[in-house]
Amino acid sequence: MINLFRNYNPLNIIWLAILLFVLRIGFMVQVPEKVEFIFVEPFARLLVPVKYEYAFSPLLNVILAGGLVFIQALLLNSLINHHNLLGKPTFLPALMYITLSGLFTPFLTLSAPLLCNFLLIWMLFKLFNLYKGEDVKSTTYDLGLIVAVGSLVYFPFIYLFLVIWIALMIFRPFNWREWVISILGYVTVFFFLAVIYFMNDMLPGLAISGRP
Image (tube, rainbow, N blue to C red):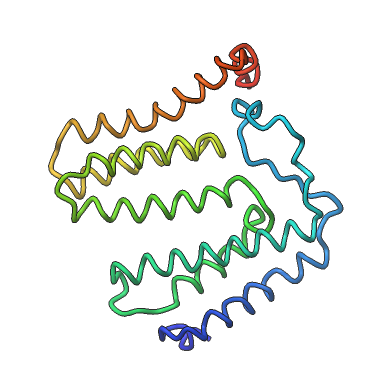
């Protein structure tokens, strides 16, 4: 099986889809009666006033989650092949991603961590650009924005802000402007969030929803 995915053959996409289904068929057969889906943190919940937690049936929830994992696997595979991290084009990264995702419950159903994986892959694309770019201020600003958006969906995503600074230390000579711009990018999202709450006279609700 591994030898099959070592070659960059477009037909391997079909085998990836089959593998994805096989790894989830057991969970699909014994899927719980109710599967909750929450994609925003409590402090941003007022931005989504409708009830959506059980909008999808359990089976449809699992199928949609499998589709998102499949797309993420292809995106990650494209990233690794684009930067030639393994020496030659291959489908092994996609294979490993689909296999590992089948071991963790948050990736078997629609969940905030699963959605944040799209933001994480987007971050990886931009982090690799730090090494090649001459003026990366816009890139670091975008990275700050991505982390902030991820924090609205899944608050522990905020820890990836440290990844930005670690990447700057590794890939770039020290430039305090690049470090500060990443903070500005993060703050921008929460600034506009506060403006939206203020314009709708919802700041008291924001304070209440943000309590533990």
